[in-house]
Length: 363
View 1 (cartoon, rainbow, N blue to C red):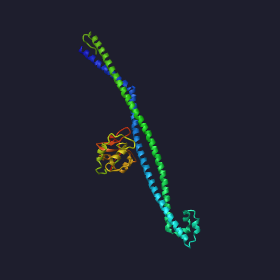
View 2: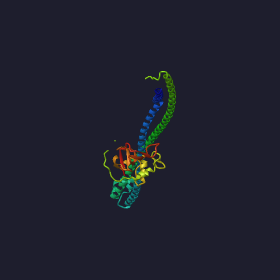
View 3: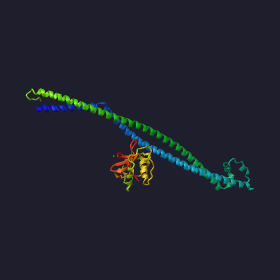
View 4: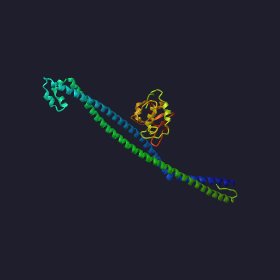
């Protein structure tokens, strides 16, 4: 009878296990498995989109810098043009006075030339009078006029550059909006799938537990019936570039400064704790507090820094992601293979592994 009871208990356990395995098998073939597969696809797509976001942010920052630079040059050339025009007006008055003096002398004989001139340019064009005015005055007028033409030409060229820069800025803004819309949609889809999977798994777990209880009851009844039948048988049972280390202590103090902003939200184009940070906005803001000025853009920051191989990074060094011609992301090396970064929309300033960085930078 002990053998029978042991066999009965074993049968109960085995039956429960079989039913649980059946339930698990049906779960793997259920819509939950489809949702998990879909979730993996969405998460892979999100990773790609977040990379696109970092690239788009960098393109936008570059477009803003280009537009600001072009407008600055236009203002500078406008000042030069104003000065050139003032110099030309002064030369006009001086040469007009000289022409009048020449006319008043009895031996000139050039009254007709002077009074027939329709403008000062016509007057200057008269070769004989030019000779009387003197080569030095003529050279002055010619040099100022040439300078005026040069400034006007450059202003026209810079205006064209500004129009190009404005167009580029608008395109990057449109691209940004499209990417952010896609990212928001994918984030929403990810959250919905995760909620659906959680609810479905909870329902399946409850169903599996109910099935297991039913299986246990059925196995117990079967074992009891087997034991009762066996009691009449007299107790018998059936059978990842190689670079030199630039040296220097770097700026490890910026790590402690960057830690103050952990938890600040990522904001496209952001460069302050109140307005949020993007990746290069964070590094620019942190380094500004130790007196080092940087451009707002990962590529520009990489170009301004001293290259550091990844195996020689010191705390405080910058870490760049992308390639030699374009850095799409930048972070601050915190030591121990970790960085502090503003990663992507929807995230906050936080720690992460160095990962797939391509080079470091030191100031």
